[in-house]
Length: 155
Image (cartoon, rainbow, N blue to C red):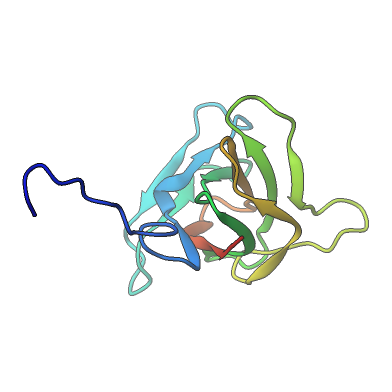
């Protein structure tokens, strides 16, 4: 390629994937329910891989997941050691807008749990400021989350 030529980016989706965005353990942060507690890397799981673990049973964790422009989020899965941990999801934005529910576990809504692939209740099309916000409600200090994924489709 000549030094004066312009290269055109041909990579699509998320790091080249047109159907999935990975959620890494490092994408999770703790909430403020238990000051002084944190999330820690659990690296002593025999044969199970690395994950992120809460230091206290009252601590919940959140992940902020960007969906690439030109795509919509359709499904998700959060993987972990406790299939009784509930998962919620919202469409949020980086300019201070109100949350819009994508997965709810309120009255009359079916609960969603760690370890299962689910469709979102509502469609979330990527815009210039929005992203998916996940919440994992843990039940014990030994609950570990490995990460997960969001399935995406071109719009």
